Image (tube, rainbow, N blue to C red; front, side, top):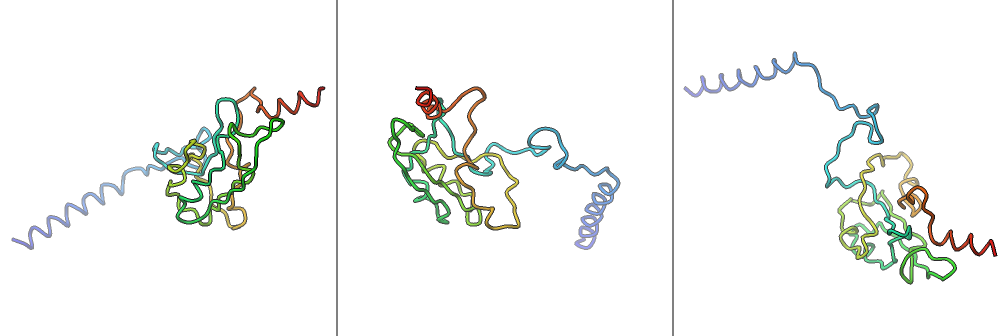
Length: 167
C-alpha cells in the first residue's frame, strides 16, 4: 500500500511538471517596462534607498539630532551638524545636517534610523538599483538622498540670498 501511495505522489508531481513545461513563460518586464520603475512592482513596506525629506516650506526636516546614527546597528550613518543663521536657513530648527552620509557597504536596511527619527526626516524610498562594482560610490551623500523641491518652489534660503543680492 505504501509503494502505491509513493508512486501516485510521484506521478502527481511529475504531471504538474510536464503540464508547466508546455505553458508559456511569464516574466516580469523589468529592464524595459514603462514608467520610472520600468516594470518593477513593490509592496508598500519595501525598504529601498534612503531619502531625506523636506517640510512644506521646502526646508530640510533633518535637525542633526544624531538619533538615527545612534540607532544604527551597523554604524553606517555619519552626520556633521551646523548652526542655522538668519541669512542662511537650511532647516526649521537651530541646527541642520551639514554632512549626512550613509555607507551602503555597511547598511543592512533594518529601518531603525527611520523609526528613531523624531522629525520623520529620513525615510526609505523605493530606489532599488544600488549595486556597484566600486565601493567608494556606495557612500550616499546628503545631496544624493535629499528629495528635490517641488516644481516652481524655491527654498527659503535661496530666496533670502536673492533678496540680499538685489539690495
